[in-house]
Image (cartoon, rainbow, N blue to C red; front, side, top):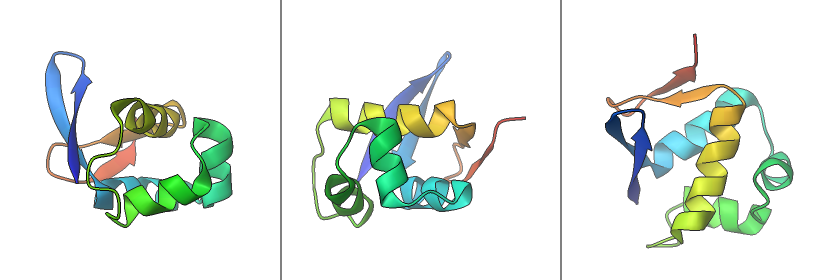
Length: 84
């Protein structure tokens, strides 16, 4: 699963490996992700494992938004990092 995300004037694709890496990078459990994104931890895990082919846009927006508010930046090359 890859989803496009608008970032400023550019469009960045966010993949399931990036979502997994971002959460791991922050040291968050699925429960912490649930608390911060308001998306149930089982749904988070299913999305990260690719078990949901087409997650709802709102669900992905909440997950990505929570990660970005914590300082994660999704890179065009498929990586993640903390914002400078």
